[in-house]
Image (cartoon, rainbow, N blue to C red; front, side, top):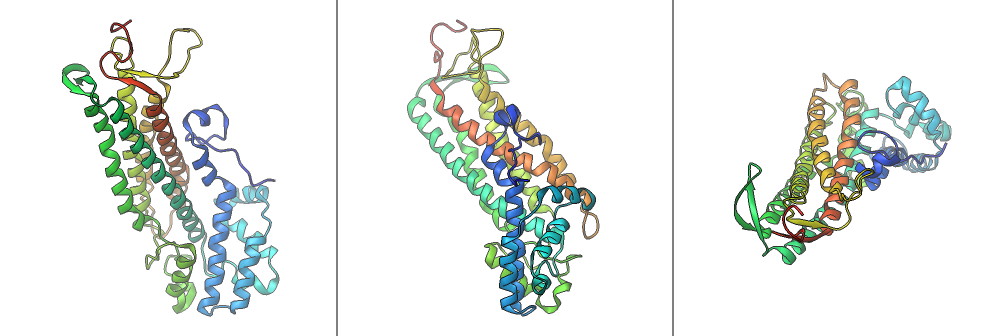
Length: 368
């Protein structure tokens, strides 16, 4: 079976119209099974080489084992079948890696590791790439909002409090409300990254005991190869950084949802303080141009806020490892990541679709 997989949307279903509307193909592809397997191989290969550096196996054996890990063909159908019994893909992956390696190398494959070391470290590799993508998109959105303010910021606009007309302001005031939180989100992400982008290495119960006195040295070597921080201990049962990431995703999508909600209200007939190019059509009412991107931003914000409670439930990793809480993370976090990516994309497209803002932007008399 091919390792390629259809991108999934936040609902967890592969491909199709819903993923096209609410998903993000780039984020989904980074989280898809082929990349997961590649990331897990990278962790296993880094571990094999670290065993050689630390003297647990001869360096030549370690390097040959790492090369065998990289070259092994993985039967993904078998991986899926066996994951049903094991509850995760790593046991099957390790069986296949060891079977593909010459017998003399098998002692350097997964020796002293546990499944959680592999999967958590692989997840962090994916998160690093996805957060870099988000940072780029945030920069693009901030630039687009600045340009929008430059074009329309001086135009008059009636402020609205509790959905009622309040006092006159300018379009620049409204756009400033959309822009300001983005800088804060960028700063929070910079603060989070050192806590999040760290190696997981603890062995079966999180003590690194299976490596004798060389556990910390092996961890340092693995972290250096994978370009991750070495936290000095396993974080098997401390999921704080992942929950903090979920909070950041909810804050980000919440800010974008506020912008979408504002624009949807501004586009209402009878208000008409924004004019958008394009717009969604109706199957029954040909005169309509629905503010679809604005509405989707609201939806994605609500989706992430609802998921955040589940991610916080997954903080309860009982004792040294929880199968239930860990599996809950797998269900929730990818959808939140894809929703955030989708929100950033929709937000930039929405800003780019603004043709006019301010009183009378829709043209003609109010409500026409």
